[in-house]
Image (cartoon, rainbow, N blue to C red; front, side):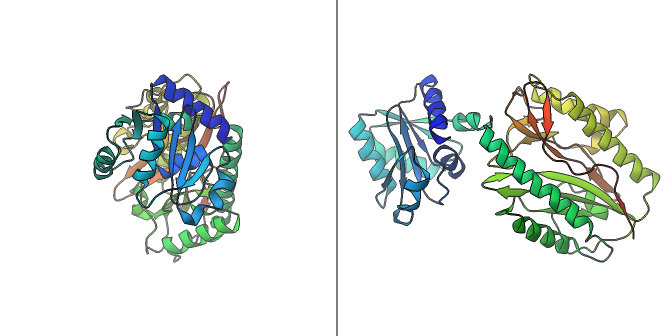
Length: 358
């Protein structure tokens, strides 16, 4: 797959009239080379493809980055880059402006002179928007782990157990299933804390007659899943049921109507309009979803500010919510593949209002 990705990258570089590109992002490095080590720099031209790394990875890197020439760089990597650019007669080089601190840019600018540094944004990220068959299969494995973890944790929920205890059990279980770790800091937010969209697990014990929101995911072979479910412990009030039903209606409506060719803003409105029509528009303060892949927040965005058009091969979340301070909140989230004809939902955990005994 790395050879095909390298071809795509070179096509994109040609379109932007880039002689060469320096990749310093660890995520983009892994995507384009297949190398999973923690250190390295990628240098690509129309004819050359180099992975520069250090002594620690001189066995691993050639085994993984088979489409690249692997070389051990000098103590100051800029010395190696400058030598290669001089050998190739390159007069300008693109760099990832969103990934490089200004201090490093200034050092490269001085060291690589007279080679001109050209700022580049979103080049590899645009390619990463479209998942190939191997990536989709890996994400599906990550979603399978998340689904099994949700089913598993339902048996551990009872009053008195702390949010952190539930978090630890979930993360341990995900690792037992083959995950290398959680996609992000696991959210377990109960009672009034469920009104916190990013209420990571605390020492709060699970109480009675309250929501618990679980937002979590698994990393599998570098790719992530992102699943949210909200359950209830005890006896829900009419308001608890109302909020849950509205969020579920919003999420199902979005899934039923999401399709390729739709803009991110339009997709966001599918969920937002339902919640606003029930009078809870102000209680839904985040976007409807985001892309996932090697990172848990990628393009495209399902957002009021997004003009990105959804296309086949993109994988996004759909996650409406309602949050009422002092009362609680509900969020329901699935991972979705955009297909030629519509969507395929990759997460399969039940979304029925799950009510657990106190």
